[in-house]
Image (cartoon, rainbow over all chains, first blue to last red; front, side, top):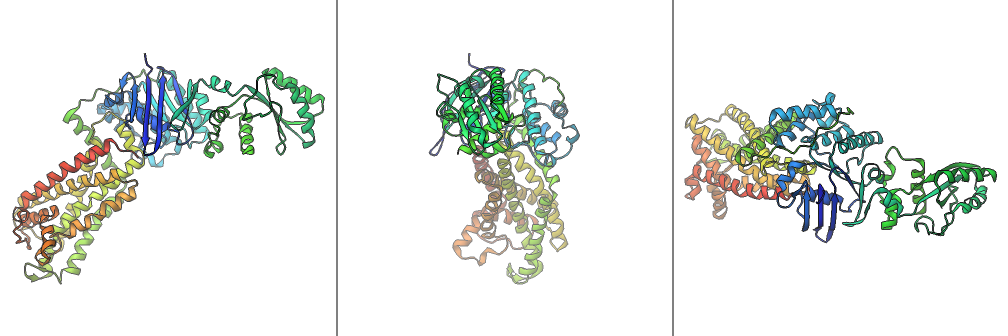
Length: 352
Length: 283
């Protein structure tokens, strides 16, 4: 039986551009699928097709067991859509916005009013309920938009880049709302450019590029494809790079060749100007302790050391040959990034 | 966040479909647009000032030099002019419909609406109905100003009300043209200028501001068959104002019927086109 969201061979072209070039999706009920890809990869087009906003040139789409192309209005009763532009009427108050959406979901006036109050309470918007949405902060607007998508507690939700442009605190807040929703059994398709976000929220991830799904799997499965973990060391002084390299070389993972993009020779990668050394390893935290002891014995003073697992950014690069780019994602780094992940990004910047 | 667990999933109530749902949905959207107007009163205010300016400028600048029914008299011209100004006012209000809908597209609201199980034409009908309310308000204010500058009706209140009904119907018809423009352009700014530009020839190549008997034959022909002229002529007849065209063109001889037919045809054509456009609209 197909999942709560199912698509087969979706194709949509705009002029010469194949925005969707044969996309298959299958999202089991109650799970979250992350559609991950850079701007223009086709994520939004996929969402628009699945939410009845756009007719595909060919292919099949079934949402909540209903054929999207044959019965769009039936599908609309079962879905909630929250977009990246926070589609609320800014001249209406939060309460008026939610009531209007409730009425248009065909609830009667009393039910729409009750539901609006409930959602305002739940999304911490009660105090601002009677102010126009124009006066809301970005985070509040996003919450109102999400509340509007949840007016009927739909079994299937679509969120198109729900946290794009939000500050870390608001992003965290939205993440916890989303997790709460999913815990309640909602099936969710989420698009994002934030690798961190897909990692955090999605059960399964589809990496999309140029209208095609180029990889799919769990976050761990995708990471495994780029070849394991590595140790990163930043030494205190330039002179210590060589002794450190000798130490790290001894810990280098043998056999299997590591991801081409990150450690070309399989040995230690060195960045002179940042005094950073990277080596692929196996053995995890236990090995990290040994590395530290060994460096200490040799008198190498270190500024920073970390065991780094591959990020989805690494996955993306190894799959597509280009980064999930867009500087917004870099500077707007989701709040909980470990220092290792951050330095990984600067590593890449440096290499360019 | 209050960590209340979400209630079990529920789909929206089954749409009732048909005319009841269309009407309810349209009224919900109309209400939304009317609330917006109260939040941006400047727009309503400018909408009121513009026709008043036209009345003042036309009556005092042109009034002394334009001939109506063989006489040059500012007082006669003012009484002649008002039907034209009323008609122009109701049609200019349509630029608002276009800009409003383009703005909704731009802000992603149309996507929100289109993902809801609502009646297909309701977003546009709601918008045009709200504009109709604003137009009616403008017409009332304009009528008061007109009386102040010396405009009078001579055929009784009922006929005058009939004339106002024809005017509002024309305005409603034109707002569907505005809706189509709003759905077809990329930005709200384009909708504002694109919504206005075609109105100038439509309102000026007509009997609204001058006696068409002074026009060259081909131009007069266009003016006589202009839907806008039919309503202006009908209003002059129903108000009992001077300057009723003597032309033998059918719409000029049967202006009330012609005005009705034109408005109904415009609504039928442009509503169909606009709703079709709405269904495939992309921001």
